Length: 192
Image 1 (tube, rainbow, N blue to C red):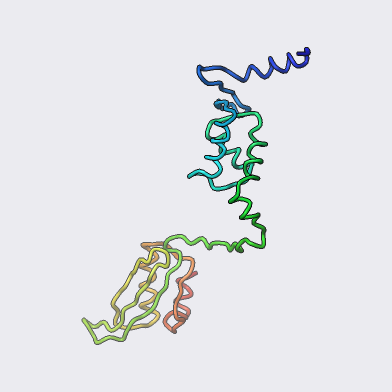
Image 2 (tube, rainbow, N blue to C red):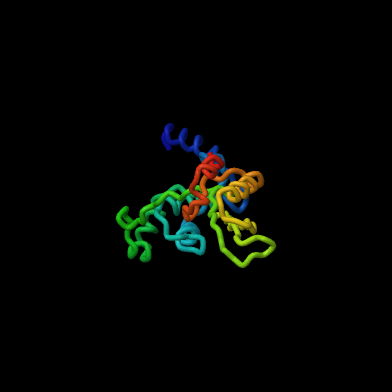
């Protein structure tokens, strides 16, 4: 070997150590990985690419899975590329383009008790002077609050909402059928 080759050899050998019967290398990310070659390397590639935890990913991801499994050999990227190129299932599938992807829609973030649906039920036959039931349902948790009431006017709605807000906090929105008992000045003042 030339002087330059000897210097490179001694510089590289610092990253390797022998623990009988295996050779290990301390990689650039400071993780110690076992060195493998030949048939064992191909078996590891196959397990990382098409084994139970595989997934027929591309060459770079397959090489990353080999590294994550704790193995190393110098030609890992080249071997992973060749292995993926020769994988029948991967070659049949082809590449997925943007045209094949589903459009992504933003998910509306909604906290518990942020959105309530409210409505009156009735009139029913009078029971202890009550003819109506005011029902409020939280949209996320499906928590139901109900109260029997003698009338279905704005005054009883506002009183019900104040008790609801004191226990669960003020919601971002209330959904109703826009009846006169929900769309009025008293209701607007409570919601502000």
